[in-house]
Image (tube, rainbow, N blue to C red; front, side, top):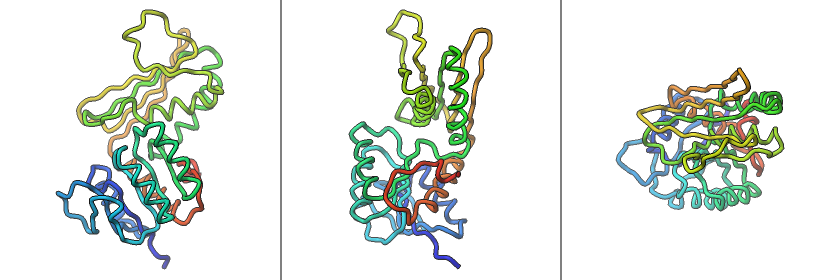
Length: 254
């Protein structure tokens, strides 16, 4: 029997951290050997450290669902320990994104704004749709909805959806997040991105292609955080032992 992949859960006491802990507990191919979280009010089956620099447990991969301020120390730790990282935290600054790129030159990093299989399939589908519909003059709008505790807006997933379209269109589109101060018609080469926050919405994303007399909408609904956790677990098993470089979920799902 193959040895289990040893994972560190960075942000283990958050909602996603606990979801992933439950999923891994039932998985015979991977185990959590340590957790990192400043909040220590929960009991876990593995040792928990307040800061990742304090962790002295050997591992094969880190799964990160934390907060943007914690990512700097995480990257430094992974480079120091030569430890692959599944980086799922969103809302990173431009400086941090640059740091992620630099770290990927030394260790394997899989970065994704959304770990679900459905979203990653949608990213591929949007490229084909954009080539047909945007090229025919359809306007593009993205509406994302999340729970009232989510701090960053728009969501990383909404930006990833916009980026997928814009890559297909050779970067011709600008992103517009707020029209409240503008009194003019929308530009043709823009993607409007709107954020809704309320209740316990796990994650809804609609990509709207609006043309003359017809509208095509691509929608994804997440009904449980488990869809993101399952993807993160699969990504961790994939990334363990991989050489330095930048990876994404397309490599995991083939």
